[in-house]
Length: 117
Image (cartoon, rainbow, N blue to C red; front, side, top):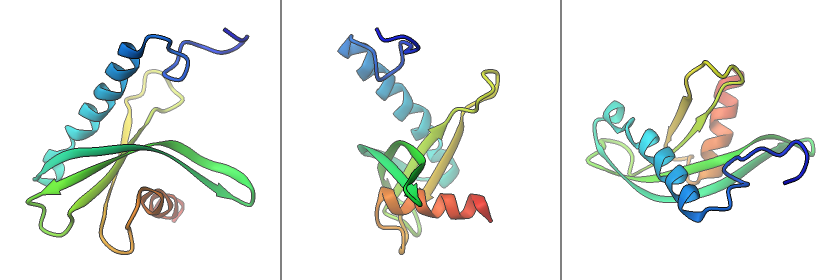
């Protein structure tokens, strides 16, 4: 393994460990469905990268969920963010797929704007 590279999700050679890590992340995010008071079914995982003035300002895996019995949205986009402080809990961002939010990329952009305001 290259110098400075740790055994992260991106360097794991064991496919079962990688699948387990993805499944655990989805389950952690899906546990938030109680906040929206509806059932969420996982659809896909997408790597999203957002740039500003030629520099990456956000990059991560966005999970897409179909929502069942939600009053206003049929889709939700969600991701987790680990704080730099190893003792801090993971933070979750959930963006409902309500126009103008029509994609994972739109959800990330909206979250960036909301965070900066």
